[in-house]
Length: 136
Image (tube, rainbow, N blue to C red; front, side, top):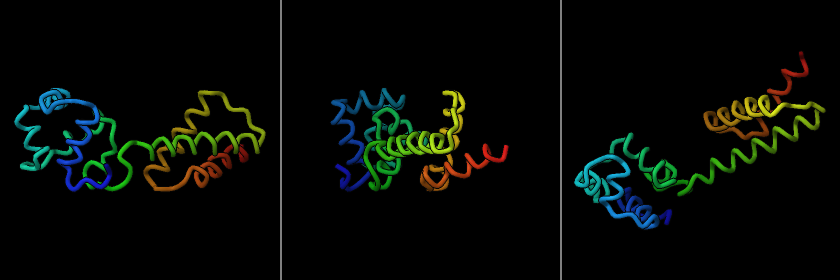
C-alpha cells in the first residue's frame, strides 16, 4: 500500500482498510462530506491540520500520507520507543543505577524527544544523559 500514487489514493486506501465510507471519514474529521471528497479526489489541497487529524483517526504516519514515503503505520515510532527502553535499561544496569519508574519515564521521554527531533539513535543519546549522574 505504500506505493499508492497520490495523497487521495492513500486516504482512500486507509479509509477502505477501516471499512469507513467517505461520509464517515468526513464525520471523523469533523469536516463536510464535500470537503473530504475533494481532498480524497485530489481536487483541493488538504490542510495540514486536517491531514494530521486524518493520520490520528486512521493511525497512519503523516510523512507516509503526504509524501508516500516512510512507513504507512507508526512502526517507526514504535521502534524508537522500543530502542529507547532497551538503551535506557541497559545503560542503567551497566552503571549499576536503580531508577524509579517515574525517573525512568522522564529520562526515556527526554531521550525519545531528542531522537525524533535530531534523527539520532537512543544508543547515542543515552550515554550523555547518564554522564550527568556520574558527575553528581
